[in-house]
Image: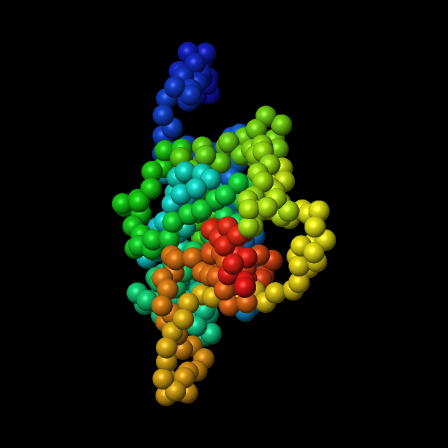
Length: 344
């Protein structure tokens, strides 16, 4: 029995082999904890994904974050081994607000399910390459809603590039594991079997989010100390003042002027229309339309849509989904004088 006991020298040797200076071996499969200072809005992403899916599929949907850990070779497929093969990766590069990329990983089978449900099918269609386009468009809508919600929460503007969908191989990762964080997400769609997807937040993106969520008092957001800006009044007078209040979202607040006639005009209701694009079709083509038919418009998915007031373009924006309703986030607009001229 005494031969099986460890002496002090043996214990010291074992402690040195597991010290922080030595790289972890394959047997060390403990989950790496994400530092509190590196917070990622994964819950926000899931919330917006739930809303977009419910709207696009017209079904009850729930997207829930199940686990968030630092990404290593041992944790990558620990909870989602099915994603290691026959899967797709969707790359989204953040272009404003934060820097870096995130990757959404899901199987081709689940991609086919989502694409089939988008086409009002029952979710049993086999995977086709065309389903990649549907997945990319769905991801673009989710990111649009996500960026808009983040902008409202943190008081700044967020934007991202168009989604890039590619075949995924676990043997040739498109992202770096160094400093990355992974979020295991479960997707529940009414009448369908729940399935998991994986989101990889690259190190650069994790570090960028720390400027908003890594503050000492654990309060989100970076203060936006914008000074008030007075807009130019129409026709050269100063009766119409449009000022930006000191609010995080930088929402223009139109103040009352000293002229009651102008104040009365500001209360006139106007018809507002969002135009995604236009298309010319023959009567034969119109009569042939049915459920599942696709009408191609004259505008690319990456181009902004028009906001029209009384059939006059006054602004342009990108489509978002907020609380199960479609909307647009304004990206550019005409000056107050140009807008007033358009309405004449």
